[in-house]
Length: 278
Length: 202
Image (cartoon, rainbow over all chains, first blue to last red):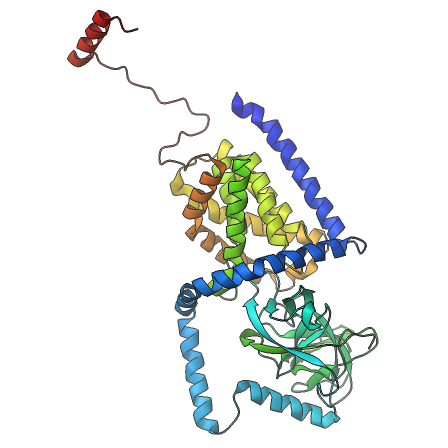
């Protein structure tokens, strides 16, 4: 009898909660109210950060053990590869510096001064995102350091992403391979422009809006286009074209772009204190 | 009030656990979802109404730490999956603790599916960009993690909700209560009765 009387109450509660959820989703998406939710997220991040750091420090040995156990084989392969690279190159730069040299070479072709005219803030990645449907990292610089939402984030290799949320001391960076990330790109060799879209963790970006017959080839370098309405200054290295496909009957090419920046091993980045307005 | 405080404490611990070492537990780039597990555990331990309420709260807390999806999406998914598991508990399942890993795994798969479907319906098309095989991978790995952590999660939720940890011999819903065999009158019980009658104990 008690169970029967609880059923209508459970359904009523479910209906109420579903309505509350739909209301929150709607308000969260509306331009007029979205900033309240952004503020709530910022406060939550700020409140949780000291505790997260403390818990992470205490549990780091456990986390490292589990990470090591799960990725032991991959770590072994990586160590072997790196040892081979070091042995072969002798005085050659390590991976990050090699990416920077490649990027500088790209820019040298265009006589672009990479980052030299744009003020920036150096930051360290303190936390990787733990959600499965977005690719983010947390850095140890926030609004107190001049960081603002929308600012580009780069590493030695090139574009890494952009700031998507900021609190006083921390900021969340949405990475290049996040499915919601879009950046206008330009082929350094031919000048063809397109839009690069993230395709998920570890996947190459997909470059769209390139007309069939455009001069884009495998191996081409792409940089940010910096066209009007873009959220990135021109000339930041983005990646290398890995493949170009022209589906039969399609009016546009689809190119895949491998990012220069090593997104899986980010440690130190720079936030460009730049906004589209200047 | 005390129950609400305990549930909130468990959810806060879950959020901190998720952000502190959820990323360290990634397999093939996929992390566990402790908040979804807590929503499923609340349904399993507390029934549909508590499952829905706790699932909503767990999802809402989770939403505060996400950037790419609107606030309320995970709350809605958590609420629905908590209710579904709780409803299943009262209608179909037993609450034997041994079933917790299976229920946790199945509930998590359902939760991921609900999240992606509702997300897509409200315009979050980026959720399906990585492709079907990746979504299946996410659901599978999250389900495995939920199964692994199900027992402590159900134990914590049972404590927080005050429902008690499910036993190994919980009755199947709808079944007749087990027959209690009549007690045989023994020499000891007869002498106890006589002593009580002499003393006048009622």
